[in-house]
Image (cartoon, rainbow, N blue to C red; front, side):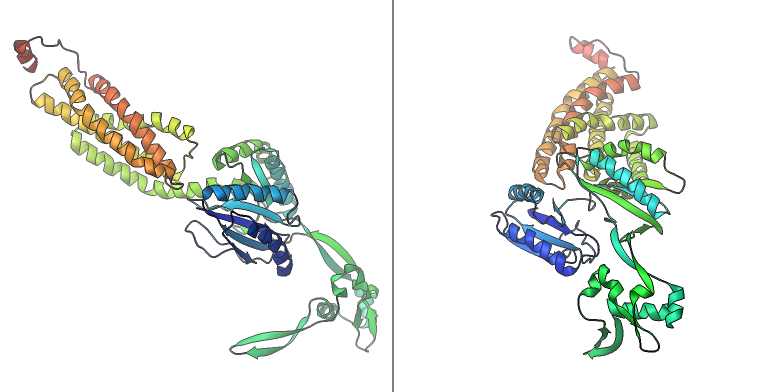
Length: 475
């Protein structure tokens, strides 16, 4: 598809106005590019679902999504590469700007991801930092990050209980007054049509945003005297997690990244997984590292297929045994199914196609095509034997008689799948069927006669030189 997806992410806690300002820098640059036909920005949330494999992001003030419609895939890729170069040169340096495109198949926001799970936040951070270093060391990863983001400085005001008692205030009363000074407190409600809105009262001015001036603010005691905050406590600034994510109620940090687009996510994930094996081996009890990203989503799709796979196998074997009427013949037919792999593997490697869910579907269909060809040849062999030919010549004649229709059928299938190779979604399945059908059919015509002769102990007989010897062969 020709859409270019641009994500603008700022640190957690960023206001919607600051996010809008950063997104506008990217949006204005995109509007000046000749490839961009329509530019639409969504501030504080992802775009609505407009494609079946796209999952909208949850509302978040520090996030913006920009959808750019281009003319075609080539202009999309050109704009994507140029945007990445411009970001490296300093476009919106305060934000993480990511350019990507729509993907087909199981959705994963980041192609490579590893989850660090454990009960202690500090230990989780330390392990995630090691995983992040391993991913950064891989030359095929880009924009490595942690979904928790960087720790944010947080202002804490520590109250001195002894001094509070001297001025006649409790901790609760002091906390309420500090809340009024900094964030405000609800004092009443105003009805607007069928809705009610709270009225918040707080101190004016901008000093409340400056931690250095927090001590200059004053509290009122029961006698109406103003007491500076510096007399009842002190300010501490501590780094804290801006966001905590849990999985199965356990804190979980996901280390994620993009990849070099000339490679497939399973390949890069395998490289990173190999690099983090020493980290996994040294994990304390209660901590684990799990693989996420595209590998996990593809696994879910494959598991859904595996549920019906046993029933499919039983049904297929039942049909075959009714056709050949023997267990021995059924096993021989099944042995020809893997022949297609000889053509599938080189084809996928040659055209840089992933062996994913669609390729697996194609491989299952290919097994059926090759076993069908085997059944056709076996049926012709039996027909020749019923007509009086001995087993050896029945095999030879069946191969000759059925070669042309089998090859023509395979050729028609190969030509029919060629248009599907241009599809991003069905391309891997089409290449699987093209390579497997072409090579597997030829191998079946060579392999099956030899296998049949060995399987049923068919011995060669003399070639008849005249009609009388031919009659002896038939007898």
